[in-house]
Image 1 (cartoon, rainbow, N blue to C red):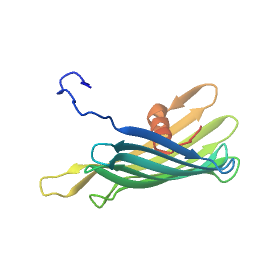
Image 2: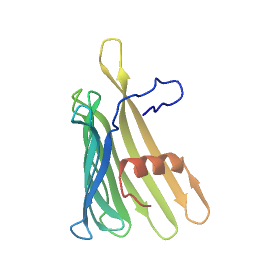
Image 3: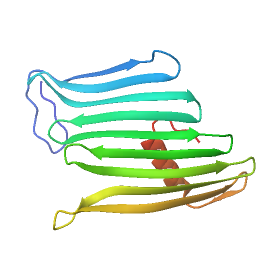
Image 4: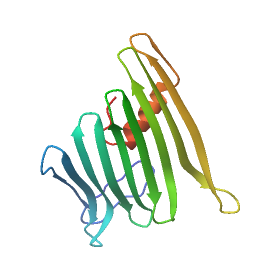
Length: 173
């Protein structure tokens, strides 16, 4: 076979990698999902991830995950969005780089909703780079969104929503 992407050399290996997904849902609340790429030439996993999710209600979710990419990436994480009464919800997440032994991202937030308005405050710390002395440098951000339901939003709601939807698998507004 001869497979190539623009600007890359032709792959002439006789076999492709195998890709697979396994998803198990023993009941309506629990889900276990794993995706992987198996290198058939070298008989090892190239890329893999696993996620355990507990979602007893639409507004409540807890995730534990592990991601792996050979020689590049090994991370684990946890995230949650949990409504503890009809108006209040806590939001949190943590990602840790096992290979390089440092946190990648932490965030914590609180959200209040009523019939007419809502407010969400999220504090995020994310790994940015190593400085010239090999010290970890983190970006920090504070997201504040005020929503006047049916009228308008104050704050960058799309940034906050995007953060929560990508970092808390199963998050819904």
